[in-house]
Length: 577
Image 1: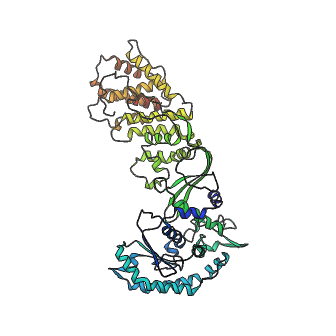
Image 2 (image 1 turned 45 degrees about the vertical axis):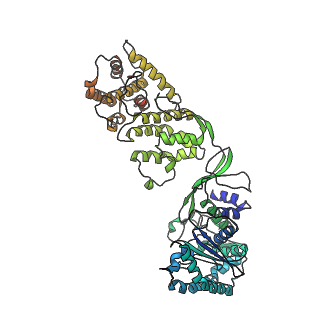
Image 3 (image 1 turned 120 degrees about the vertical axis):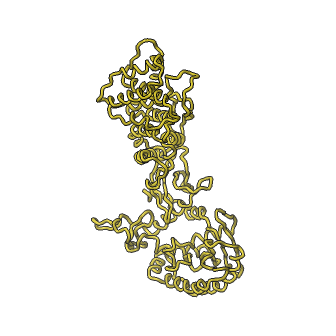
């Protein structure tokens, strides 16, 4: 699972540097107090990443000096100071100044904070973990010395802050010049006592400690139901202190990943190519073994989906979304790229709601019909497994049923019916049935074309025309219903004009609805119209058995396809194209 990925990350000799390379400084003022009495200063603004030796020094020192969160700060309950060692002091502008003057409250709080720092660093927990890490106790005189220098520098710092016009939430971060190894030692001293989920579950073993990882684990006093109640052990697993620190680095690295455009990544692939190289890629390219991760970013970074994908590739067998329904405007093109196929399915079947809502909590999905919501929730895992992970088992199982319902939903997608959109969706459905060879319907698209040609011939023929089978009946019914509905004097066709046919449970009811819509608009027809009379007689004269299932595929195909009632150059009366 996730710890397979951790093993791969641990094997990388540059894991520490990988984290720091992705790390960015928060906006504010950074000051290094050098040992020779001089100062180095750097200002960082939001969305800017300065370069250079000084910036890189601050980036490393800042990474090693930040707290996990304010609840685990040394400065509780005030939470004014946000640093984790005595080489630094971090606070926000609004804590330092009020109306352009130093806050007395802040000046008085600085010695209080350093007293808390000394007590915490000499606490039993910190001393025990420091001993496990091979660290000597802190030098209290060094802490007091740094405190006195900071207090002395406060008026000067205040003037710089006012001069730079820092915002209230900008940070002021003070650093003492020390070797980076010293910063890293204090980083370990701070993090070891907090690295596990809860120290009550820790077990000393050998030269280390095993505990419940804080990564992807929510077990705490507020969630006792996550404990194992029926076993001799309360927690599901424990990891070593060293692995817990590596897990922290892994999650930190993941949370800071960006794509080539600089946008934050919430998912991606980690290819197993070279143990000296590790990267999160946002797309699949050539065939490789990969780790797939999806992360949720919040107070903590959580991996909410992980999979190992052996030999996955972005190339697929050629997907050909042919224009089976002979639509006048249809721009889907054949592709051998997995993401290209995904884009077509998302566009034509899901109205761009699939990729956007792969992982979204249902309560956060907005501007979507109730029906489409249900279909999305039923199918998105299968679609994601194929398009993101290369596993076609789920999509083969559900594609026939789901895509038919999605085509029906196209009728109800908007108050006004756009048969062209339904036709595009039907083309994609037929292409998917052929691609996955689902349910013996592989050749349905080709049959639709043949049926149109046969129906066009029969409609123009002077001989008595009849439907050859149930499939031709339903296709002809779709053609007839569309033509009849277009005789309405209404400017737009409403979806409730089509709903009775889609909701018909039995064949007799379906045919009854055709009779009803014909009688409603019969005044608009030319009784001498050969095509219409032939088409009407074919549909109304066909004896359909009531117990058989309605062939909605053929009805929808007939409804959305090119219509035999219109010859080239004649006005189709449709505004949909």
